[in-house]
Length: 96
Image 1 (cartoon, one colour):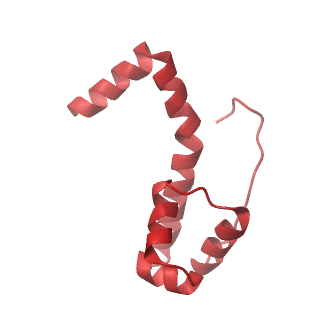
Image 2 (cartoon, rainbow, N blue to C red):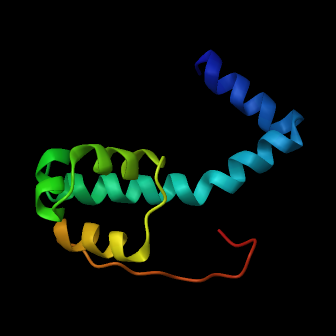
């Protein structure tokens, strides 16, 4: 295990505010992973995806890094451009 992974694990145990911040970001991280996975399955570069969506590679990069919170419309365009469909699910709080 790397020193960073060890430190992260230690902080998750010992620092409740850190653990809460990590948990709060989990949905955003998961969305970014799903977006990157969809693009990879489609065999597209960020540049190619940007062209299909009529946007820039910079926007795609921001979406996939989590630096930009996409609207539902943007998620739909992303999904269509990668040959996927968007599905949104509401779950009771506290479920994984």
